[in-house]
Structure formats: C-alpha cells, structure tokens
Length: 420
Picture 1 (tube, rainbow, N blue to C red):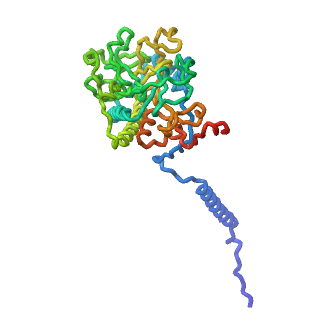
Picture 2 (picture 1 turned 135 degrees about the vertical axis):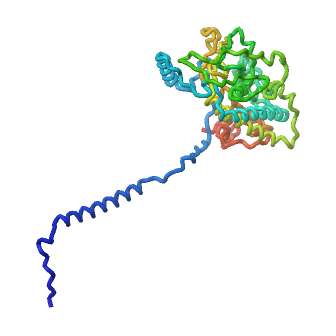
C-alpha cells in the first residue's frame, strides 16, 4: 500500500519564514561563541586589598657615597619642581590664594598625632637600648674620618680618607666609639612657630637645637613642656610664596637650654652611657631585639611623617631644618660656600638625611680575625644599629640581609686570587 503525503498548498508555503528561522539559529550560534570567547579571555578578579609583596633580592649594592665637591641630587625631579612653581606663580598673578591642606596650612593632621607619639616613644627606647648594648658590644671609630666598626678590634681595610691617611697608607686610626657613632646626631632648630619669623644669622643662638626626629614629632602634634609649639586653630593663607594671613606673631618663649645648659633629657644621646647602666647578661638578647624593633619603627614612622610634614636639608652639607622654609643662618662650610656667603642650599630632605643608617662592615665572627682589604669585595654591610643588635643576639629582618651578603662564602687570602 502506498501512503499518500498530504499536498501542501502553494498558499501555505512562505519563503520568508525559512529565512527568518535561519537567521535566528545563526544569531544564537554567534552569541554562544562570543560568550565562550569572553569567558575564556576573562582573568580571575583579584582582591584589591591584597597587595603582592615584592620578592627580596639575593644581594644589593651598597649605598652610594656622594662626592663632596658636588651638590646632592634632588629627591623630586627638577621638572616637577619647576611645574609646581609655574602653577603657583600663575595663581599669584591672578590673585588667587594657594590651596593648602593640613599640615601645609599650619594645622595638624589628626590621624598622625598618635603616630608621632609612638615614634617619640620608640626613639627613647632606641637611645636607651643602644646605650645599654654599648657596655657589652665594642664599637670603634676612626679619629681621622667617619668610619665606624663594630667588633673586638678595628678592621684593616684601607679606605680611610682622613687628612693624614697618606702617612698611614689609608689605614684607620681606631679609638673607642660612643653612642654618637651609632646614632649620628642630626639636630635641628626648635621652632615655636614654624610659619613665624625665620631664623637669622644674628639670632641663631636664641633657639634650641634638638634631634631632628624629636622636632618632627613636636610639629606633628607631640606636646613637650620644655619645648612648646604653637597650635593654630585657623589656617594660614598664602598667595604664591607670600603669607597674607598667619594669625599674627606671638612672643616666643625663651629657650629651655639657657636655664638648663647641662641637663640631660631622655630623648637626647647626651651622656646616655652614664644615664643607663650595663644590663644583665640574661637581658642582653631581649634588649637587643627591642632595640632592633624600635629602630625599624622609628625609620618607618619618620618616613610616614615626612610624607606630610615638610623637612628641608642642605644640598651641600648635613644640616637639616624641620619646617616649611629653611633658616638663614650662615654656617655652611661645604663645597663653594664662599659663593653662597655661607648660606645653605635648601631642598627637600629624604629619610636618610633625617635618620641616617650609618652603614658599617658586617662582621660574621666578631671574635675572629679582623677584616682585610684583600677580601673587601666579599664582605657585606649593615646599618650600625642593626650590626650592634645582631651581635647582641637579635634576629635580623629580611630586608637587611641582601646588603649583608650572608650567602657569600668568604674565601681565604690565597683562594681569593682564584675567584673570577
């Protein structure tokens, strides 16, 4: 039997229906392919709060020694300085006030006040710890240059640059060191009002000199009775470089040092070895670790404070001034000071100028033979505080190990000649 298919009438056949059905299938296929490609190319999202830590390098170079007959490099590119100056000048020509935010307008930053107190407390712990450790850890300093060595005896590396180094064949002239050889005393004038009258050469003795770290903490909100500071309630106003409203000048208190010239304070290294007695032998590792932690905290805290509060440094010598402008005292004796009439060449300071690390040679065996010039390239370096604390039993943070070159084996003198 044959089954007859029903006949399709010409009226029921619509060619546009077939075309529409094909287009819909093509669109679905393209959509599926595009979604597949998008999902395959899309990277997994990362949490923005989690930062990827940079790996610590195996070895790093020593800090460069800047030449004395040349100005220090600017920490900020000079083109950016010129661009900011042109913008300020343009606003001043238009008579528009310079937009200032705390602390540039004389007001405190409330979020940094607790940090300033913590940095000052860590600074006191650092001074006390170093003074106590120096009773047991021997430190030597060269009487002709700024070289410092932490060991039972001075090294024999011929790198002395003192005035009589030629007579000693560049060997150092070692003497017993002090706390000032470990914590380099960088002092600054204490200002009751940083935005007030600038220090002149004739009035430089009317101001106290205190550690720059302490002055930075005072201007960041720390209140010390001996060194008062003006706390503004209204911001200052400036047009260009001119201050048009600073709230008037107030009578500054007399310097505290004039009435107490020899009184030691707990945040100064003056007579610190006499103020703090030698520690017990079982307490030395604990004191060393506390001193190491305090050193790290002071350095990181000063770095955070300097991002907001202005600190100036001379581009030729080691003078530092905490404040919006440098002082006008004329006692710079560095390169070409005659051309500047003894004035300082102020520029923005870096952390190493306010809190110098004072790197010294790392001694792996303090009781072993002294370091020699023939093996100089195999030795490492470390900040003086880190070297003292390490020899006293503290754990060295990982960030200091690349410069200490702990993974390099120091050969014997005869083997050093065979090393490429």
